[in-house]
Length: 437
Ligand code: 5AD
Ligand code: SF4
Image: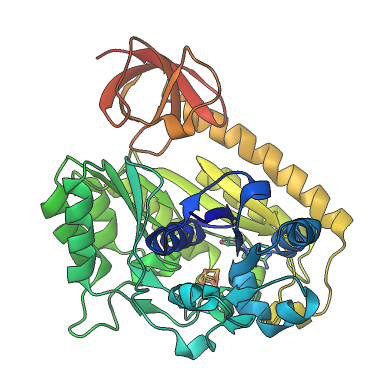
């Protein structure tokens, strides 16, 4: 049987696409391998969100050139956002590459692999995307699952390449989502994460329209307290009273939100075309905490956007201080093809961006440590899941409803079970404790 080596970069949408690619290719008779030396097919599922992510792909691809010479019949393919962004140019640039397939075109892979098939490209014009992607999903975990509910984005933030690589916003019909989750529950999954680029704008364009919160309520009725439900990533502008109430009320919905702010400066938020200002973002945070006091809030921040001044950066630090984030991904701004910000004047130096990044990370460390220390002395529900474990045999690992990683001691526990853990220690990145029952 032919062997597939799949290499995945990027976000959860890509993780799910990789599970789709796996599903498709297992159906074609492939088996999975970790060793690229024994693979008959190597697929890189790529990310274009920042330049660094793209460069990683090219250097990995370069390392396969020799392998291709040694191994007759070896095929190499590129999927994901770099494939969509670059298309045919990749085939021109890398003569040993066999196919290039964009995120919406995964089902084209088997055809491109057929015996005697020419080197090929399957990418969509942004407007030509379809949904759903008709590919079987072969999940890696038996405990938590990604479920795509919408794809693409209509917002065109000026720094972001996603609307160009993943196309316009389109939502999946609620019945299909419910059926998928019903099946996951039947198979014993304990957690689903609903995925979409602006996940909480789900459903508006469907006929009949349905709101994100209505969908959450349907899912809650189905899974009750047997499964945990999360979603990522919401856009702050679409955080409503109803959503905050749902987080507080629905047993399945976890007290956790990843709410990208990007900047704390009104001037920069405006330049980014984010659609909200600092005060509005802070109001959303206040709303969420008023309704669901136990909520953990994480975010994304970009430092060094074109034209950003020390004053603007300081406003971001102030906002971080004011919110007290549980965690954050902080990025140096990276110019991306097609985006408005790429052509903006006053691009900042790597040196400035690096300095600001370090500074923001130090502040983040303090706030996440402070937030985590507040759990010391509490007993929390943990979903046991080895996937988050460190290599250390005495400790078990899992996550709280707030999505905090917990390492804990205790007798044998079953992966996928819920246990109560008394928290005794905290670091910025995880909690530690003892199992209670
Ligand atoms: N440069 C740096 N970070 C970016 N992100 C998106 N585009 C860029 C870019 N051009 C970040 C944003 C987004 C996260 C997924 O990646 O913070 O929320
Ligand atoms: Fe990119 Fe903005 Fe859309 Fe998020 S909302 S995917 S940052 S364009």
